[in-house]
Image (tube, rainbow, N blue to C red; front, side):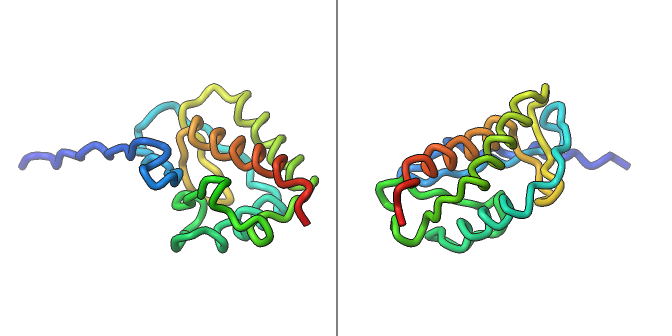
Length: 136
């Protein structure tokens, strides 16, 4: 009997589609060296959950999150600036940047992400939280 051949996981490109939406690439189990990040702080999880509940399509955890471009956001509803969450985001970025890995597993989410995609999304959120700081 022949052994089954596993077909490689296809990667989704690019990060932003024609409609201006950000997508994660699929991560195959044997992609590259992987590390595990500790669970995210409750504040950060709450932040991502509130963001997911406001995104324009149905979301299923952060792996399926789609971020709209800033010009399309409803600034009164989408962003509620929180300096503690911002500090948590900064800590996650610093921690992930210090790891020599291509893929990271986030315990709380039970998902694997390409490190570059993960850092890109966190920085993207941080930049836009900075821009929205003055919004009430």
